[in-house]
Length: 274
Image (cartoon, rainbow, N blue to C red):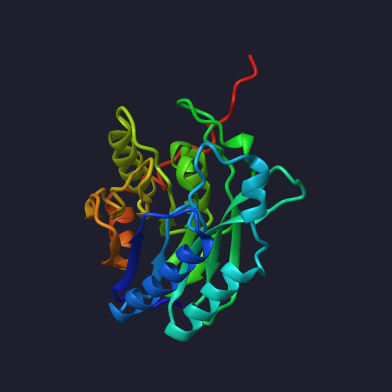
């Protein structure tokens, strides 16, 4: 059983370059900094491996990609083990296509082992973007992983707009939803970002941890929201590592007083074919 005392989660908000090795070096430094601040888990934004500009072809991006056992994840795993901290990282993962890659989140335990691999389900083919030109869709939702910070369900960025996914993760046991993101700036985009994160937290009685990229085309504003919708962290445009305390007893208290999961009417939630 996980202890009910407060745990510490670190959020990394970083500006990514097109240089994979530079980003990897910064990531290792951020892991050490997060551990130095007492974090049990450190969470990185989407596209941690490298910024992919619009001018980059699908084939060029595919050459940047690695397998889960490649240098990028292996190096982060060593850093996780060295610092005794869990890590949520993201990579471009090689797929069975020379022109497509997976947008993948990887959960690394404090012992350095990979405990979950989630490939982004919902690709951002909206508002003038078409991620499916370069990325492949994942095929399933990964079950939550027990960590020192709680039971963590993984999502990625655009997944936040699809409440079915966060609900499934919560029903399967998640009390912390982690959504690494590269949220593109634009009209009403920050408002959507804040609203989606708060909604997913409130409707599920779960913490939502949403590390975002800053700079380039991204809006920053990495956030942590508690199960009742209280904003515990908003990093604005600051690059770096921030930590927040989370408390499993807060999840339990909110779910008792606002029993949205218990009050669901699953007996009538059926799609009509009429």
